[in-house]
Amino acid sequence: MRVLSYVYDAADPADHVAQVLDELASREEEVEYVDIDAAETRADGRRTAMLTVKNGVGIGTPPDELYGDDGQPDLTVGALITEEETGRRSLHVGPAALEALE
Image (tube, rainbow, N blue to C red; front, side, top):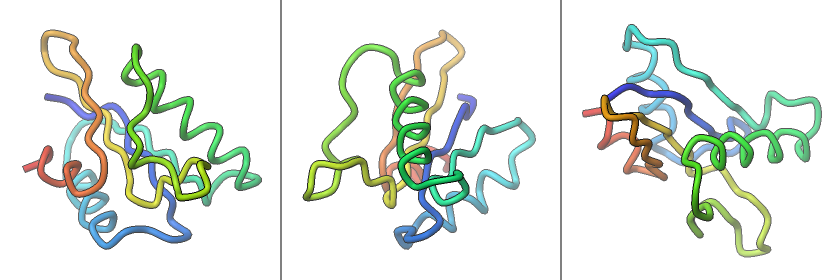
């Protein structure tokens, strides 16, 4: 499995996000990091993050865990996009991202 992208929000990260970032830093492959907080505006960051998620997994809708109570994208839990040797991509949301890297 190779990691394609990790989408997160450094302004208000969940507890496991720092661990995921540490794990990713120790990997040899290039990973695309999409930090909502690093964008010019929060709206731009959310838009880029959700496009990355949608493009990363293709068909389907992003899971409910990626949305806040107000219905707006909330990537504080983080989302890891991986690809198997067969080309199949998977989305690992929240602590599942850390488990996928083990």
